[in-house]
Image 1 (cartoon, one colour):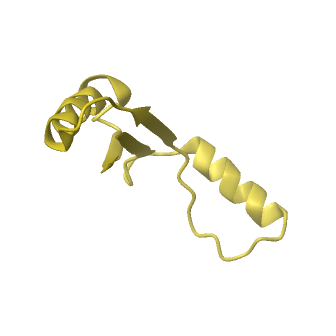
Image 2 (cartoon, helix red, strand yellow):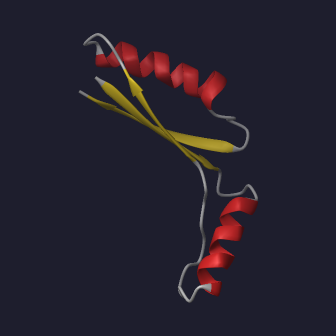
Length: 80
């Protein structure tokens, strides 16, 4: 089993990396990019077959350690 986790800044939080990428894209001629959000992507290999328990444990890990819930959102997907 594998878990895929995407962590991004909340929409209301200033994202200087995203703004830099957006400006660079415009400078290179890529028009129409209204916003860029730079985040983190994690893949976690899991042992066991209980997807519900894995989701609960990883949800807690995301909230306590992997992300900063004050300024970041995360999406968690369990792939069996």
